[in-house]
Amino acid sequence: MPLIVTGTIGIDTVETPHGTANAVLGGSCTYFAAAASFFTPVRIVAAVGGDFDDSHRQTFSRFPNVCVEGLELRRASKTFAWGGRYSQDMNVRETLYTHLGVVGEKPPAPPEVYRDSRFVFLANTHPAVQRDLLTHFPEHKLAVADTMDLWIDTAKPELLSLMRDIDGLVLNDQEATQLTGKRNAITAGKHILDHGPAFAIIKKGEHGCILVHREGIAALPGYPTERVIDPTGAGDSFAGGMMGHIAAKHPPGSKVSDVSHMGAIQEALAYGTVIASFTIEDFSLNRLATLTKDEVDGRLREFARVVRVA
Image 1 (tube, rainbow, N blue to C red):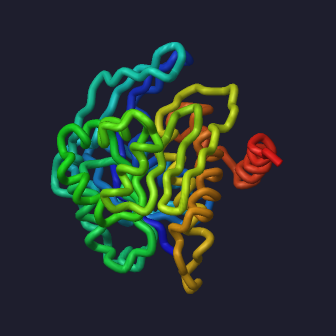
Image 2: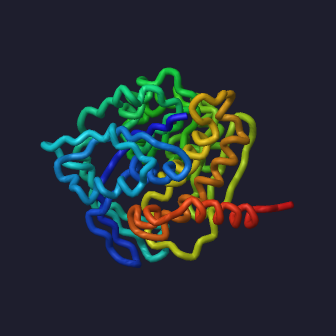
């Protein structure tokens, strides 16, 4: 069934021990859509400014399953921009600047042709913007949101309100502690479920993720990769692979039962983990733009062997 995503489309400048990428395509919506497109068509609802040039737009054309009909151009505004620097161990990141641009303006409305979307991902942006998109899809089958420390700090009431209306929440372990006051990831996840979602996915970077679900608890390691060039967008790609796989298993016209049951989410996490492992192999979307589905399937089989316990 159709998958839709809202969030930021940005112009990033990233410094890592391996080099610098200036003014490259980034943003939560961007990475999610590119990753999800390996499994299913995905629709974007986002805005960019007049500084969003043809080279950035052409990058989307390298992902034919990404529909940009919902990408709104605001010529008098500026595109969201972010600059960051990674330390030598790549686990510590310093934000050099954040320019909200169009993200500080009224969010775009989804095109009418998107109204049949049933799988909704609310990529990282203000919770009020996430909630606004969700109201356009009252008949959704699965709604999952991502968040970050900024919104927990500045918009916690709006985030808690959103959590009552979504099926799942994705965030990292530090954000889970910040949101709940609980240092243990499992305890934090259970606390999140008390606010409404059926499941919480707590990311732990290179160490994988923990799924806290109303049906139980599961853990998955990260894919053991040696090539880490730029970690930017790994979490958004992870979510894109996860949601893309779930949507692909329920094509238009198929019968949908409980798509949020634990087994379905747990299986999808493996696909998200594999896609994220490719994203970090180069700057921006460079690696995803050359990636093939055969490579994805091959790494998934390898990952299955790595995590096998019996």
